[in-house]
Image: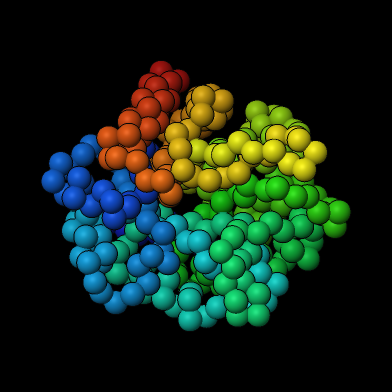
Amino acid sequence: MNAQAAYDTSCPVPARAGVGLKPEHYRDILDRSPDIGWFEVHAENYMCDGGPSHKYLATIRERYPLSLHGVGLSIGSDGPLDREHLLRLKALDERYEPGLFSEHLAWSTHDGVYLNDLLPLPYNGDTLARVADHIDEVQETLGRRMLLENPSTYVQFETSTMSELEFLEGIVSRTGCGLLLDVNNVYVSATNHDYDAAGYLDRFPLKHVGEIHLGGHADEFGDAGEPLLIDSHDREVIDPVWSLYESIIARAGPVPTLIEWDSDIPSWDVLAAEAARAEKILQSGAHVDAAAE
């Protein structure tokens, strides 16, 4: 299978701002028909045959493009992928025909137990081969290209033999998958490990990025009193992350951009205001592209 081939969908995700679809906002969306570019859903929340959640999602899907974001495939797991989980994902993908599908560079299962966390990986040849094999299996099963999201990390491994960027580029080269660039994850990891987020993004392979995520994080402290950021998705995006995002759009042009807010869910108006801020930056990027042409 050629994983690079374009996925034929009747409703591709536009290069606009979208938001995560939450039950708290179903009625606001259906009653007000807001000017939002698209919605993203966590696949595992809809891996059932029916019920109110599917009724609302089906109605919203008729009006808006959709992106599907997995949180439970455990792409980095040392063992095989859960085939039943993958087939449920395939059924959901076929049911709603999302314009994009993405998953995390992380692992979250061990011996059949699902952990409520996205855990990091060492960056070395063995891990790269395992992750690439899993991505090949996902893309072959779904019949489409997937996007792999860069992680937020809190530890680094002595067994790593390559940088995160080298690892991501190796995965793309081997599998033909795309990348989901989470800008807040970059900021969180850079702060936690004391490196320059802007410098990291200057080297990021933007030509492979099919989607961008923006979210909020919690400020905490480690055992020695050092800053420790937690990718919490429970508040507004901070100004330094917005600045990093602006620099990316200035270089890459408009890319579908999601506002992630997964806990302490705000009112619709607060979430929509975050999306409007991203939309304004995307429109500026579109003007830059037009002027360059």
